[in-house]
Amino acid sequence: MAKKLKQLISEAEKFLSSYDATTAGGAGGDQSRLADLLSYMERWLPYFQHERLIHLIVTVLFALSMLIVFGVFVLSGELYMLPLLGLIVVLLVPYIVHYFHLENGVQKLYDLIDEFYKRKE
Image (tube, rainbow, N blue to C red; front, side):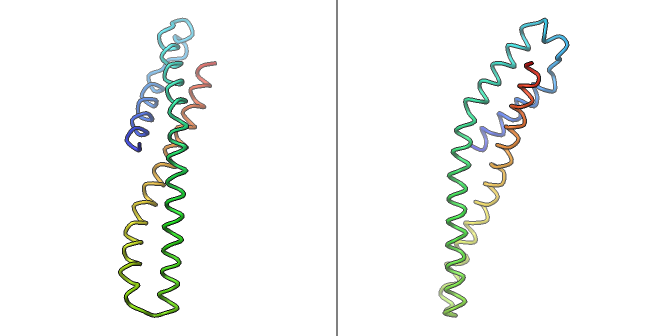
């Protein structure tokens, strides 16, 4: 899903950089392509939002489990909790990185959709 998001953002940015508003009003080609791309982006937006929500939930649950395991380790002092804590941290870091990129990508998609609407008018 992250690959699809990057591809969509790249395609939209490439279109916006080559879009000429002065000729688009008279020629239907650019205006039609703008409308098609805008429709395509709006169709994919709910999927990206859903993906972002799911990853937020998973990331928060992993963070809570890390805090619980860390708390048990601190209170009990048992060393057998360290491998579990290490495993959770190893899994949590990629989730945080992935969620960071997903969140920023969706925010960028919002900005691009706004820019498309400005150019459409």
